[in-house]
Image 1 (tube, rainbow, N blue to C red):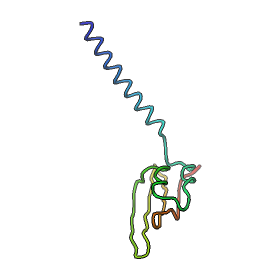
Image 2: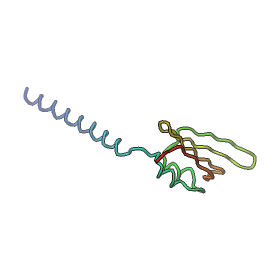
Image 3: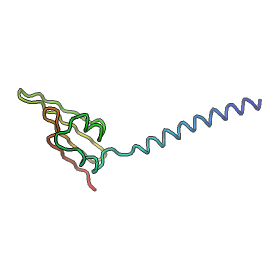
Image 4: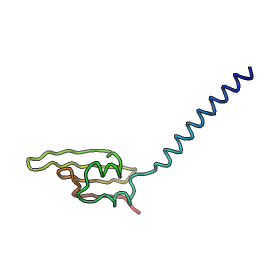
Length: 100
């Protein structure tokens, strides 16, 4: 009987350890939509480069015109919004409501 209690406690400790690792991992990731990250997005960057900095967008709007393709990425975080505009898959404009 003592052996089964020990095995149960070991399983519980492993589960708690896994939960702890997940919580730490999630908290270390933190906000990706920061003023510093948005400022590092530069004109001419590709979608892949922007996503490596800011992560996947909250919304995407694609428009195909005869002479160019326009894509708008929108990132929402609470009350803040960041908008990145791509023309022919390169950043041409960015707007942000992020404060310091």
